[in-house]
Image 1 (cartoon, rainbow, N blue to C red):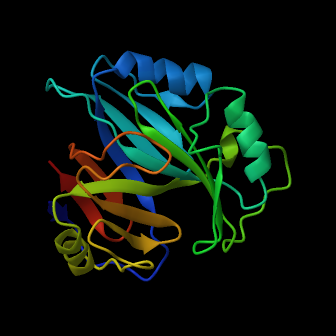
Image 2: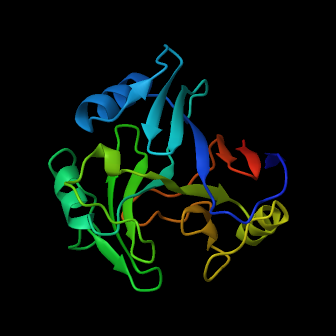
Length: 223
């Protein structure tokens, strides 16, 4: 893991850019632009940019034989979870765990739903009820406010947490040898041990290259 940048400020953690890799670039471009109706720009045969509120997600063509996939969560207004679920369910198949297609975390005071894109990326829509970000209009893609979680897969969770703390980030909640959230409610690294099964998925976490730019912290490169 390589970090580039200065000290962390005291402001909310903002994930400004997220670089991910894929073997299915064209499929993802059509999915996010045509199926979800989101803003896609700077399109080339090697990459495209996806505007996710205040975050720019950049998908790049993978040059390896592996097929990368990632976990990413998008923050939505606290009062629009039901509307967001209707919006998502009309466009994609919601992921299920047992008989549920949504979940409430009492610890985090948040509602979440999940779906997968054509490359197997696990996308989460999450409403954090401790944030006062209510919206007074019907849900649309404009209410996807920012990327607020990025899965960070590692062989050693506690060592990776220590590295992130040295960058100025803080633990957020309980930490174990297989799972650790680091950051704050506005931006989190979900640090998980390799081969741990992702929530609301049958996929086991794997290590793939990614790059994250965090306001006032700098860039973090994996792989």
